[in-house]
Image 1 (cartoon, rainbow, N blue to C red):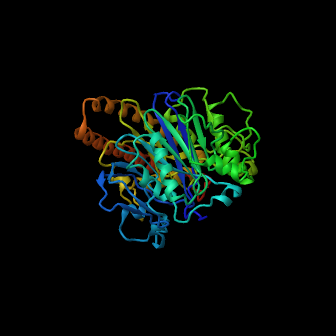
Image 2 (cartoon, rainbow, N blue to C red):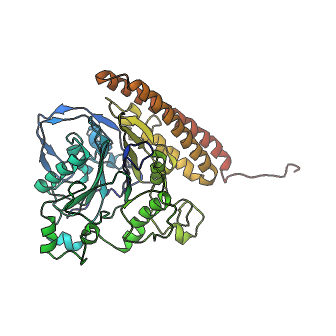
Image 3 (cartoon, rainbow, N blue to C red):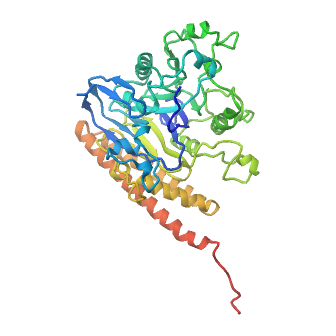
Length: 491
């Protein structure tokens, strides 16, 4: 088994088309890393013919034979390999913790067929299963998944099968959960040993949340329409006597973990999301290993609901690290939104309309999710370019700066920050409606060119509003310094 160089300790949320308020399917995730500054970019990789048919991972040397043609797709890769400028930012004076050894990490995006992928949610197999099928040092790891999937998959369902074949041939270097969506379906796949995996189709009227722990539960091997699995997985479990249950085949029980760390680091995040989306049920235990993976929400789910979950930190509970609970309670559970969230994304596959990739750099709690169309040739320079020194023309640095300022005076600034995010969401809905109306009259390269220009307009609007808000808070913050003194005016 190999350790991840930068573990992606994420939180994922998926929503079926009949569970959403607008009929779209959604996959989403906070990409969390080990360091607060782990710079990301948002780019479009063009369609191409692979003249060199061999992919080589910068992270672990994995070699994979590629198909001949690669589709265009959006991605949020690590800065170093995407920048390709030969610099080792880890040793730079800025201390930016990005390195070629982390690999490409394209992480999330839509391809030109509007198939979305979010890779990955780190998950962990137990010692019993890994004893008989350990990870492969040069197998497929998180750094490679976006690059190997997004240019080639044609549907969410086919994406699972495509990756399953890759795992069969090359093995896996680590445990990972991968989300797939298209306009009709959402699939979640968990790989927890060198070759064993299962996947489940999220029912159209349901949602699901995963948080760094094996999430998938019972598998119906007589229902290939809604489940997929590694060839021979049942025999593997039976041969090695791995099933602890007498009368069920529960993937979580067989392959997953149930530890003290899980109870404090992982399961509470699922508990909080379900508490929010099913407020009628307040009986669940945040440390329970039996929280359901798939649930029906008490209402239709909006993009704002998904944002709320990804931005949350046990709001309005004693466990909120920014709240008023006891010091013990505030430090009991790992939050969903973190200072070390490298990027937060929501992939919205809309019926009859263009797909949208909502992106948030900086700490999600304090920053907006910005809607970008994906049938484009570019996102925007402020998202695609990166400078190792802080520069407020860079969306990454701009939002990192805003988060730091808001959190430094949380009590004084949080209500204004929430209003700033709400205003931007209102503007986004109006802008998307207007763009959709015009986009319906266009096609082909003309449509792509139009949506590319729209992305620039959206980025420019959000960047200006964010800079203005940041400067306003910095100005107000000067009055909050503890280095002040009031004298009696009569002296």
